[in-house]
Length: 601
Image (tube, rainbow, N blue to C red):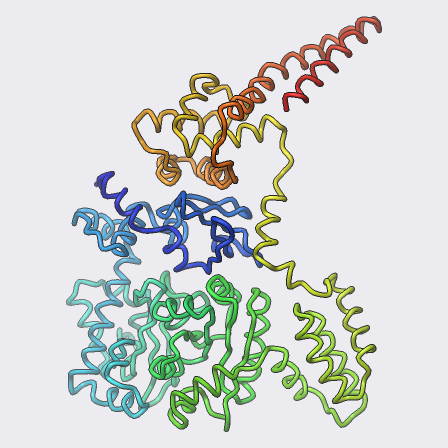
């Protein structure tokens, strides 16, 4: 089955690449392009560029590039049809039913699992909200202060305390028991297949596309672990997912800030209280993969864990991972040893927002207080070690203003001169190879400039070919002129191939559209190269003479290189024949040819 070209074109043009990419990456405008952290490789400074004008993306770090369809394919691991379907749904375009049928047949086990989770999500939610079997779970949730609206938003549910209830339901829907056990939806116990979550309140865990890929179950009576998650499978990896990320994403993008919790109820209570840029880990410590995912979306992460000793240790570990990923970290402080959910119940939504989230302290402030708990500051030796550790941490702070603020507080509290503390900071910075202030070094303007300055040094003909192709990609008239005078006589093989494809593309009557041209290319190598070339800054009104000059440089290399090589071979033969006069004459010819080529370049 194929989707008509007109439909694909409509889907591509109605999904602006900046809008789509912004759902995965925090983009900041710099000049005519947008830049962000590449989602395809790990980096701390942005080298991922998106151009709205040309509707393409390119990473100057890893080289990946393409249009909006390519991006979704790379990002989601989709094939072409699946990417088209996602973008069609996003823009409200109806696709033929045959394409939907193809996707179902091609997705196999994962698609069946998604379907099973979808059926169970609806079933558990219906039982909780509308049946006697779910009254116990419904009452528990209402006692926790949640409204019916919130219950519906998060699709909370209840699994009745009946061993084979879920197995019977899913088997009637056509799902194989073996797959359900393998995925962890069902579990085997005493030679029986039973519901893993029986007797528990159900928290559906969704991926970033809003599809349920697992469950969290909260025991409300009986024996067993308090919380239980789905077992890991092809769809569900706890270290790769964050609870509520799909609902929170638009609020995270809007506020450029995310609040990180430990538990489902903390997220739900906060969301109901009006703080909606909230996510949680899935019962495990924060992973570097989760931290990097957050960094693509935001600059700042506010950690709001419990205030017991385990919560404090968890905060410190999470903060280190987030800072390693390049995030600015703040820490929310809760009074009276309460967890976020309990705080909201006791003090209300406004107090939580204003006195906890908005009043969160910097990581340095949290770290200073955290360190105090690890030393006996009544002992002189411990005080010295404490001051050294704080100073070492302050040496990593980018802002000189923030650094001096804490150094002055340290100087005043422990009667150590600022001069001494500053010397210690400089010592640690030198050991780590840090500059005194990296605030400019990390700026977008500086990073973008570096991208263009760090181009590999190429021969003049190579750069001329790239520039010429860049103009050809945006102007058919220039392409026709190059085809007439130069044809496929480019020196770089990939440039020859791109030019040939471009000639055919325009001969089909296609417009000057880089995004469409990239879509027509089959080889990944060529797609990357075309998007890289298309990002080259160009003069708006280039003259015919300048185009002719580029072609002259290319032609000069084509004709000059064989002549020089031939002369060098003749010179070698003359030297072997012990004819120094002839060898010298040939050497002069080589020098003259090289001078001519240099002038052309």
